[in-house]
Image 1 (cartoon, rainbow, N blue to C red):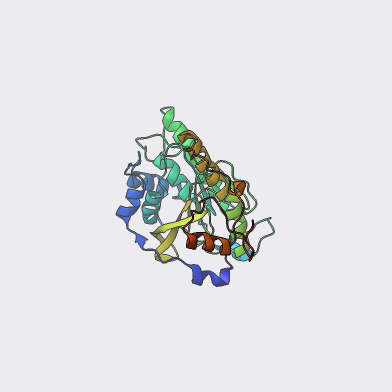
Image 2 (image 1 turned 135 degrees about the vertical axis):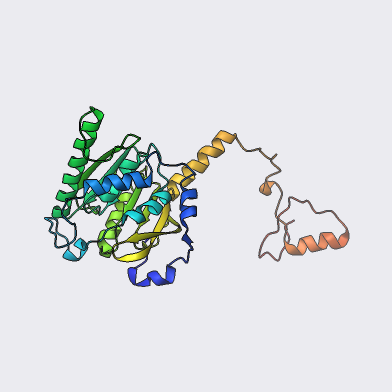
Length: 308
């Protein structure tokens, strides 16, 4: 299913970017329970005194250091990205390459998913994300119990969230339904293994990547969304719908056919071998003499002698 990376330009689809209004339309017209501005105010408070994710990092996973390069989506870029994710109450959101966890907490604070999960291979950045999650969890618990709180109070309840230090190319995804893949600096091998593992997840329905992915029959590129990030004022992120594998499509079509009932049967005619075969020469003789030729008679190929 994969096209070599060096041939990507030959197969790259030319799709128009999604405007912010279109991104909202893709979200089904439903508004998040907590507004973008209130969630951003809360996130700024959570990360106010935290260390930056920029700078050197390390990992115990056998991975090239080039995969640890870092960049962040800005607070302003989170809103159009969130709009094209089309999240719902039953969705489990994954941010692969989650850095210090800002996007994970943003999605959770909007309150429209079952759970938000972040995976980061850089151990220093994961530690910063884990500390931010603990600060937010402690403050939310204090708010719930009527105690003091340091962060702005939101109108709606926050969804569940968690972060983990993991190599995304070695994970086995069981519950991910919507995924953002930070693949801008990932080598092709890591990307291929990650996408292959994701496509084994039966719940996966949408995948958004920073850089375009190699063509795959399971991924339908439905457009790009313009996102503001630290490495570019505007970056075009690629939105993919995940389609069923061919085998599952056939099973689905078969099930639909069975539900519709058995097809109508045509009456059987006489068997082709019920009459002797006639040569071309014999057929021409009969036609010339004006005699009828049975419609079921077959012509004997290659025969120059008519049967008696």
